[in-house]
Length: 447
Image 1 (tube, rainbow, N blue to C red):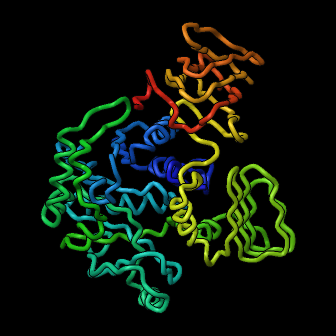
Image 2: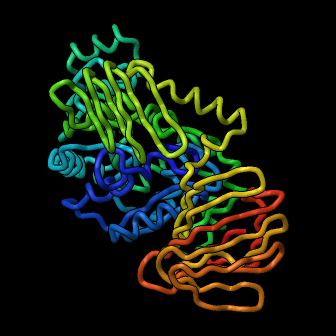
Image 3: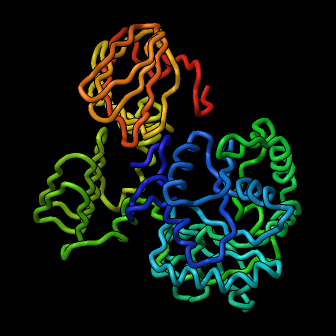
């Protein structure tokens, strides 16, 4: 489900909203001035559209390359340095099932953050989990405790000892502190990160909905987590307990535990038939999946791939992804259905010298003005209205009407209507790769 070009933060894995959208919707009962979303350049349009669809206004900072959480948070803190607000830092791929408990924990932690403490939210553990880091509490401090120590992901026996001791929490990766306090601590412990981020912000530029930081400066920034860079070194770290049904849904087995189950412990999402099976998670995107006599298994079917794994080994899917990348296969990067800032396309069929796509263009959106050196295209409108540029002609097409675009001819496609435009595109030629696109003009700033 999650690909490099469309990661899990953008997917509706647990609710109808995506995890990114759920993260912002979770703040409805808090007094939030504005939001800052930090994401990669390649995901910018997906993030902007998902925030727009829930009417979430705020700044989107684009990282030229990923550098882990310490630099990401530094960019947000620098953007607000003059105001010096309290920052609530949330990962966009977590699940919180009890919103009231989440709100109460954040509200209780606010005075600590305002007083200059760096707050880590510690999830009250429910089991000796070996996949999370732990925070050991010390003396009481307001609504929380001074942090005594941070612990790496432990083996099972050690994790059980943490649970039995009653003074350890899962490290949720959620934090709260004033922007200036974070920058001061980061300057004290990792001045190289602050220096690189400041230089990147000094050459920032606004681009549509986005704030672009200076590439040459930011790529020189060391990659480091906030835990290693600041939280494990500062003397002002406190932990505030949170018991809100939290999970970082790091694997299919953890998502299965959160999902609604039948009397046999099964979860079935999509067109699924189960028989004589127990404790099984089956999810189908586009086809009937029938499973008979299986236990403790995860099955996920998408348009271009099927995963079958035992729950105990489901976290090893990363090894499959790595192998696909090394083999230069496309599945690790994109789905068969690929999202673009103007809409999406689904590769319905592909063969020698031909390819068929179903293209959906959002109302008011327009593909780039472009040409191809190696392929011709035939467009057939399925629904909606299309404004077509074909060479030196521009005209409208309605349902069941078509146009042919020869090799090398400049062309563009636009949806002037109020409903999505759907067309079938038949490509033919000696080379059909996506890199055979010469963009002449583009509304989205793509090269």
